[in-house]
Length: 176
Image 1 (cartoon, rainbow, N blue to C red):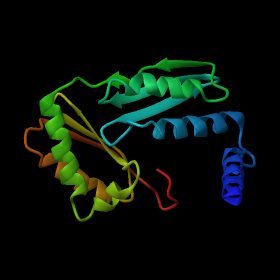
Image 2: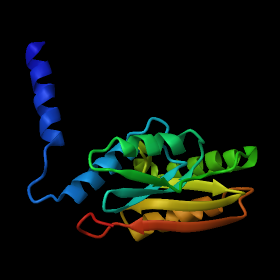
Image 3: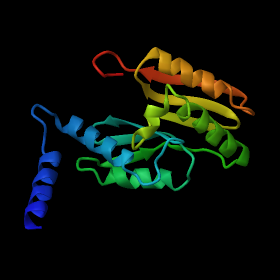
């Protein structure tokens, strides 16, 4: 028991340690990204992004749960080095029709044989943002074919007015 606690403590210290050559700003950005992804109610129907300007962080994106907006701000303020947070996150309007479209789009995309592997990740990389019947796909996929299939599946969802496919494709080095 003592050995496992010691190993956990050491691994936690190593995970929080600075990476060689990492600047204070890049360390702060890495910690902010981690905090946002770890929010309990952050999921496939939300989009969170941020930008930094010195020690000021601007939060952006769209969320389907109203509580996620203040949670994201609170988590960001706790990151070492952050002095102020500007919260520009949009809370999507509550709509039973949008909820139905979200679920139908989720099933269409993550139920597809080519795309199901993306749904196996803790936070699936294809985010489905629905506002007033309009679907916007955001996130990162491995290749152009996956991007096109996701767009086709979303276009097949009944009741959706329009689909915008803003998925980005990773390059061969695993970067977007």
